[in-house]
Amino acid sequence: MITTHKHPARRNPLRSGRKTVYERWSSPGMFVLAAGGAAIGFNNFWQFPQLAAEYGGGAFLIVYILCVLVIGLPLLMAEFALGRVGRASPIGVFRFLAYRAHASPLWRVVGVMGVLSVFFILSYLSVVAGWVIAYTLRAGFGVFVGLTADGMNAQFAQLVKDPEKQLFWHSLFMTMTMLAAGHGVRRGLEAVVRYTVPLLLVLLLALLAYAATTEAFPRAVDALFVPDFSKLSGAGVLAAVSHAFFSLGLGAGAMLMYGASLGVNERIPRLAFYVVGMDTLTSIAVSLVVLSVLFTGGVDLSSGPSLVFQALPLAFDHMPFGRWFITLFFALLVIAAWTSSIALAEPVMSWLTERFGMSLRRSAILCGPGSWTHGVVTILSFHDWAL
Image (cartoon, rainbow, N blue to C red):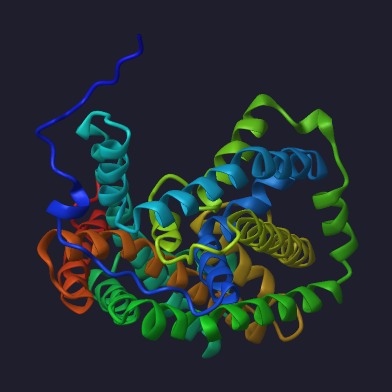
């Protein structure tokens, strides 16, 4: 006889907790724009090009696409489905699922870990996004024109060692994020992605068209698409798997929250496939732009902040109209960071709404300063608290 472990004293979380009504997306297209914009982040810009070039170009691309289709896509569909079933924050979803399965209530710890992770990621992302805003204005005003490699390094070092400037840009970006997230799905998130995500794609196409005019574009195409399996090591396979997880924002609860607002008749596999396609094509297009620019400017390929804030401005400065196109590139990064940060704020704000019965605006007022404060710790780690 098969028995199940029952918890007779446990109350139904849907009855005992505060009920939160989630707005539905106005259309499947808006959902794809929002989820795709949330998936497109810094990793698409400052990590994927270096990984592809280091681990065999097309060989890495083949493995990455397989990882996305075999691992990333099913997990993304699962997050969307769990969010739609639970209609709650990550903590509320796992609490509800544990109740339905007569499982241990400790499963809600998984949701707690997700909410805490996006809270801390948001605080760090806001600091880096502040750097991008500052660099967008500096590029537009021609600050980087004529600088040497040492000059570019000095510009970046000057910014990260100045806590007052970082504090201003960090505060500005966090305010932008909370103003959008605090207005809900229809008046906040959809109002932002309706214009910013199409603008992101247009800017990316403009940069890709510009890169296609360079003499190094065929070399970039070869470096990205021609497979060299001799360079594909075990570390490269692990990098492909890791990037598939991080690029799609899996496991943190952000995509689960987007699923909480899906209608019951929406086809999750199709929507998830569109989101995966948007994210993957963006990574490929960005890689072509980055490799073409670096090859043309004669600058070594790197990854992380050194690629975005030092190598690319130097390379663009060696190209015709480089001042304006590096400005477009940084504007593209600002949009990507903004849509990603709104997605990161959603799980925290939703939990605050469920737990304390406050409005989204009040939860934004609480979440924003909390994440902002932790971001200040990040800023000080580059200055007073640096080892």
